[in-house]
Amino acid sequence: MNALGTHLLLELRQCNPRLLDDLEFVKETMIAAAEFMDAQIIGESFHRFNPQGVTGVLSIAESHLSIHTWPELDYAAADIFTCGASFQPQAAAQIIIDRMESKDPSIQIIKRGIEAPASVARS
Image (cartoon, rainbow, N blue to C red; front, side, top):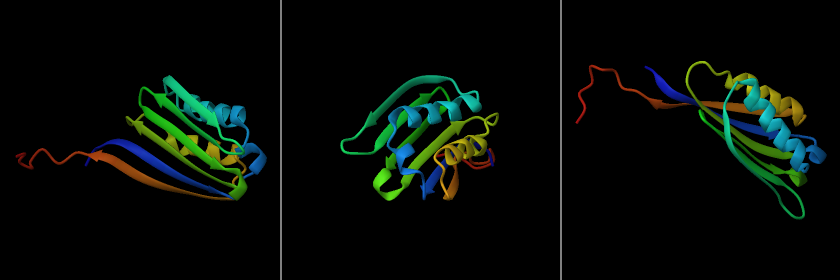
């Protein structure tokens, strides 16, 4: 079966809290991951919370990358969702993992929009 896209859910535990609280660093990291995949960035929104934490979304023509950080917990949650077979979302995920200095990362991979075989009748 063919999937329309691949969605990676990143659990980034034991990260460097200083990096998780640095808005520019988080933004640069997400852009680096998107650029590594040759994704076309079409929009962005990043925000630093008071007293701590960053959230951000990169809209790409091929879907999105997002992140939310909890420096006080040394934790970040990130998503990479891409459509098309030419992308390498796992390699982009590794960029985020490495730059956030996560010592205990995990990745869940979900295939999205799985198409039914042509022989299945549609109602």
